[in-house]
Amino acid sequence: MKSKNHVGENFKSLTPIEMEEEKSKPYSLFEQVIVSKIICFYLNGEIGDAGEYAEMIHRIRTSTENDVIEIHLNTPGGDLDTGVQLINAIKSSAAYVITVIDSRAHSLGTLLFLSGDEQLVHDNCTMMFHNFSSGTYGKGNEQQAELDTIIKWFNKLIRKVCHPFLDSEEIGRILKGEDIWMDTDEIRRRLKRMVSEEKQPKSKKTKQLTEQANVKEDKPDETSGKLQT
Image (cartoon, rainbow, N blue to C red):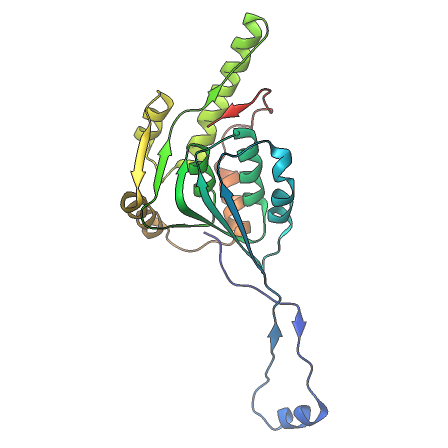
């Protein structure tokens, strides 16, 4: 979990009178002015081609450590390639990213929700986890190679993003084709458990280094074709 502590760069200057008054004090006083923004995005409906989200991705990626980003979700899922680019932007952003379920976070929406630094869920909401959907074309051996790569890639993605919110047994059931549904009460119960298991808050940089150290295999190359989840 990233820390919310921020360090500003602008210091308030003292007037000559204030400087004279400060000399008589047994302590020194410094005041900081912090420029901070709260940026809200609303993902309503199916998530489409990545080109439609370029501005959002750029804003997330380039926001500063003083900023807070809220991503509100009401989505049935969508293009997995776009989702992965959004997830990578969230993970690489210096900002503190809060993901919020406003109604439903199904399929790809679950991955986006669990990629935030903090997760919030409103009443009367649902989540649904399932395996990806895709199509291939070309010669039989080419389709087989592509599908094998995509399956391996998605298996790694869901384990990295969804654990420990989901345990290994649940992830295995999803990869075998089962859909897993949750309501607000169950989502909150699992989030509370995750927070209680977190021993101490981590800064963004510390969290990224820890995650990188836990990766045992190299990331696979990008795959062709459209993936839906």
